[in-house]
Amino acid sequence: MPASNPSEKILILWFRKDLRLADNAALSTAVDEGFRILPVYIREPGSAGTGPLGAAQAWWLHHSLTALAASLETLGARLVLRSGPADSVLSSLIAETGASAVFWNRRYDPRGIVIDRAIKAELSERGLELRSFAGQILHEPTKLKTGAGGHFRVYTPFWRALDGSGEPAEPIPAPKALSAPADWPESEALERWALLPTKPDWAAPFNDVWTPGEAGAHHRLDAFIKTGLKGYRERRDFAAEPHVSMLSPHLALGEISPASVWQATRGLSDDYSSEDTIHFRKELVWRDFSYHLLFHFPDLATRNWNAKFDAFPWQDAPDLLQKWQKGETGYPIVDAGMRQLWQTGFMHNRVRMIVASFLIKDLLIDWREGERWFRDTLVDADPASNAASWQWVAGSGADAAPFFRIFNPITQGEKFDPEGIYVRRFVPELKAMPNKFVHRPFDAPLTVLRDAGVSLGKTYPAPIVDHSKARDAAMAAFQKLRAE
Ligand code: FAD
Image (cartoon, rainbow, N blue to C red; front, side, top):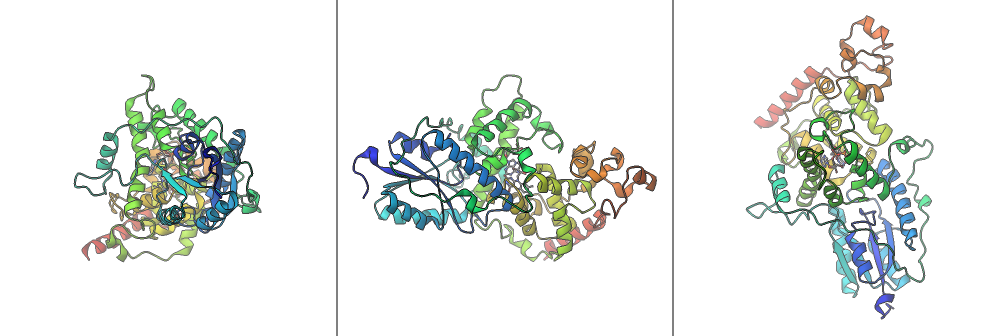
């Protein structure tokens, strides 16, 4: 039976993609209203939103939950872990603890929305207090509307509407103390969830790059503002330079709120150019725009936004797909990107565009294969940004790059990694190649290759396709599609 004394009332705080204590509206409201708080994380079957949890993000989730549990402990609370469909897990917890309220922060992926709506309806009917809050994105997908009252399909007016709708609210500080239930229900052991890889532990190198958890997220943001933000507008496309924030995996699991990121770039000294700040915010808003698209087009990860692409003659080429996945295409910038992904669970944005263009337009492989691979291998895998970005590169999406914009992997490499630093970091076979040929070893004279210790087809792959021929084939397929 629920307690009648308000300070005895137990509230289940359901953590999902908001693994943080600061700027967590559900948590701060529960604290302000004097509930005894029971923090819970549910491992839902086959889903962390849209589709199964990818292996790289599972690694992240393990460490993020560990960090969250440790922070809760400092406030005298615990994190209860349970597995199963969310509705039945919540029902059991309510029965075990007598909880009378459930709060959460909203999620916007299609499966999550369906699950949450059903739970809200059922538990409210049973007399529980059910409340949900905003915070995963800057603006609710239903709030921003075009002049005609519909949803946006083009980024620039979306940005204008968002920017014109005022600053996001000031972030709410983390609570200093939590009131805990007198008895704790049982929790599953995180180790039993087997989120970490073993035999082999392919994620071991991730530890050198990342510190999952809320403290790691704030540390990453501070470091970016100190050393990366200046020059962001001009240098963010240069793959080897530290002018990107690498905040995306922290944002993907909500260890930091996008409003906190936005607000941290307010009121900076005159040392900072407003151009850099605005450009950075504009990138952050691509994340919101992707959620806006996903909300209004729930099949974004599986169906062409532009149905014309349904007739595109994709190749079924598992060998080529595998070479792309392994970073063995013979195009150094593509291989460096795919190996950065493998080694760190991350890839620089410019390089993501290059490798995606290569898969879709040089290999003519369906963008959904790329979307799937990224979902499994990115620590920042995000149902909205990943799907929207793949459709953007394919040309099938809303406000997408036109299909005929085909990246040349050689000139893109030369432009955005002019000294080959990024390529040499992830493709050590090419370490000794001179700058002139580091992005085109196949054009190097034999003596140059020999001096650099490179033997094409042996120490480093020969190109798996000829880019200019592949480009022509892609254009021909696209022209045919357009004519149909
Ligand atoms: P910064 O340049 O520091 O930008 C700050 C934040 O803005 C990012 O953390 C991110 O949250 C957001 N952002 C920046 N660019 C974009 C963008 N183009 N679209 C949406 N949000 C953006 N991003 C993901 O978070 N998850 C994905 O699964 C994902 N898949 C992608 C797949 C492809 C094919 C491409 C081309 C892009 C993808 N992106 C994805 C978008 C983008 O590449 C990453 O958000 C960015 O590289 C993250 O690095 P950062 O944090 O250093 O970005």
